[in-house]
Image (cartoon, rainbow, N blue to C red; front, top):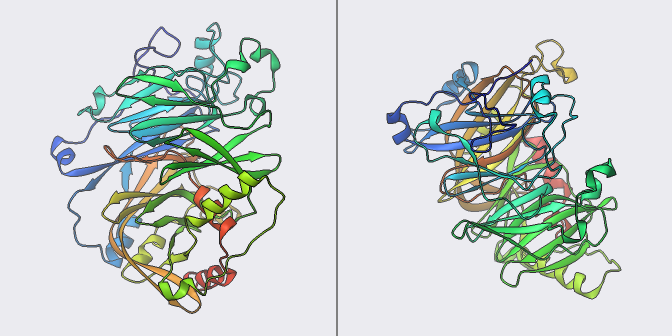
Length: 479
């Protein structure tokens, strides 16, 4: 099965405008009255490796829908189609995507022409084309173009080196990208013969004002096989988690000094956290078990009662100091689950889903957008995790406002939030669209590109959160 691009270029993947598939634009009046939300998906096992969706959300929200209206929306979801499709083989696997201003930047990854899900027409098109296994290419998609039919992917300024399984983030209106070690991502050593590993730049920063990539000091990973798992920016430090020798390890990059510090090994942490985290007003918000949680400051009277669990490790002195610093950022914080009051049970009022994924986006003024997406379960065998249709996907949007208030009930802590808006979509494509959310963006706002479990890794490594909080939560919301 093939999925033709809008353009049939003689070049292997369109230098000026790499192949993409674009859909019709909605009316100009709707464009002027809506806030744009873009969802970037990866589909590792599909002939279409990436897809991008645009959702129009009202700038001035109507009154929150009633439960009856919500149920009707779930039974009759709106239709949604991708505005961009990138075919497997024409673009690298495991690209990272970041939003800066009104542009999306796609970068890094690895070309694999032997991927089993590449269409034959793509293989024939590229079989005589010589490409870097780890391309330096940067692709740009301009969200500000008023008409979708005029939107095109175009090439940006190339990086100094390719990036394997990269983590990219935005800070100070610049794009930072760090790549994993090559040894972990390639099995055929003959493909490395043209690579100069001694001069290979694992870490770079892009300044759009100068339109220039600058090589930064490589992370101090030495010869240890490393793959980056997550990242976040807290104050003036970028925190990144690496997978090394069977465990997570924390690295810290000082944005002012442009120096790296390696920190100690991290203890195990709850792996049920997912989606991007948002750090707003000294509180971290993220997704947990398809709901929302916050690491929020404790009340002053609770601080003296809070005990931190410490673990002795044989680490170098500088590593121990950095762990202490990371822990001190949230020394008097604790886990708070979102309260189900004030209509917030809407986050559970979604279509039945399998292989679901979630993420969170801060719109400003404590207003958040919670996104949940998944595949429809089989009506008979769904309990066995059987999908009804691998070309069909549900996307649910819930907008809420955090009120900055917390309370304790039945030995669990909660934060108050107010439900504002919800809407539901169904996606039906020609290609199998099983996959994950790899980015959630809104123009002119700065966001991160990949699911960021890093904050939770740090928190659960530095503070003690009783299991009763989780069991209490599950008891309340599974009742």
